[in-house]
Length: 148
Image (cartoon, rainbow, N blue to C red; front, side, top):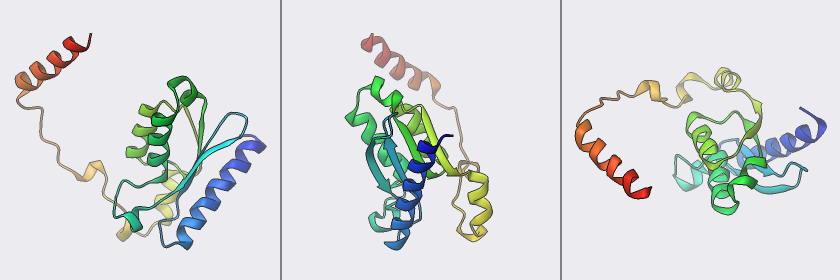
C-alpha cells in the first residue's frame, strides 16, 4: 500500500465517521481512478433506509456497473473502512471491480462487535437442495441456448 492508498482509505474512514454522526452504522467507501481521482462516495444507510443491503460497498459496486464500461470498472479501486461482507464482495466481483483496499478485516471487526449485535451469516441458514433439477435444468438450458 502506498501513500495515495492511505490518503484515500483515510477519506473512506471519514465517510464512516460521517455516517455514524448521522445515526448510521459506521461504514464508508469510495471509488477512485488509478490516478487517485475520487469518482463516487457512499456510506452505510441501512438505518435510515430500512434496507438491509444499503452497504456502501454494494451501492458503489452497483453504481460502477451501471455507469462505467467493464474495462473502466476493472481499473477502478474501491477504498472502504472495513473488509466487504460476503454479499458485497460478490457484487463487487460481478461489477467488474478488481481491487479493494480496506482498513479493518472481518476478523478485526468481529472482535470489536458485541456478540449480541453480530448479524446472521449464511452459516446460520439451512439450505435444502438441489431439487427439481430436471425442470430447472430445462429452463436454464433453454435460456442459454437462446442467448447464443
